[in-house]
Amino acid sequence: MGDDRTTVVRSDKVLRVLSWAPFTPEGPFSQSVHAIVNATQGPGEYVEADFAVDYCHDRLAEFGLEPDQSVVLMTAVPQTYLQHEIVEFETTGLRVEVFCTAGMGNAVAPGDQALYDEDLESINQAPGTINIIVVVNRALTDMAMLELVQVATMAKCQALYVLGQESRLSDRIALGTGTDCIALAGLAHAQQVLRFGGLSTKLGEAVSRAVSTTVSAAVMHQRTRLDQISRA
Image (cartoon, rainbow, N blue to C red; front, side, top):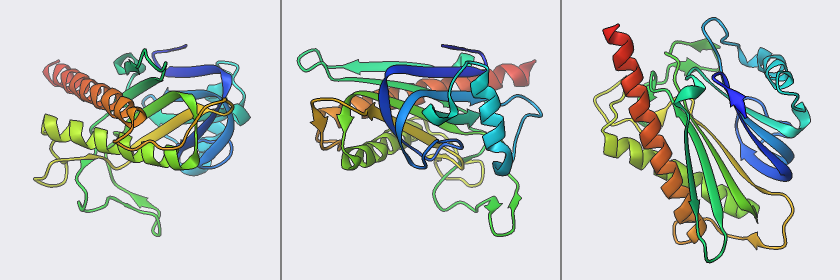
């Protein structure tokens, strides 16, 4: 569901979501989510953090979504470049679905000079972010969700390393951007609850495979897009 400015991942079942997205209804752990949104901000639409709530409310209203049941990630990348991957194990029915957009305008390596000083409220960086939405068809413990965020981050870093993505600020390999975001969702209610999500688990395997595939494809599509723009 959505359009070229908005991807809406909806669920009839209640989801628990772990995320540091610009808009969450209950802080990092949201307990009653039905929609996760990846919203593209067009030229001139950039909003400061203080105004993000009102902006996200307006975007949610376009699709009739309730703010207290929705998580919103924001990007400058058109949703036409969104990548989607499903990894499923037939023997157990475990299913992981991943959505990703990648803008590399502020690709950085760990330890690069920071371009944002919150104390001084100053920012001087190009737009660009990698947004990753992960949806698991199982209930997850808090520990499993934290592990899976780590696994998704490792998979993202590996994909960028393999692609040889250069930092915009140094001669090192970038392992992300300055504003990357992950939203990880599992069922709020289910008979089976998975306790762990590390790389030694099938859940960790599924998440890492799906994230690696979508990040790689999203970055390559972004490179093609920027190359076409530069040639125009």
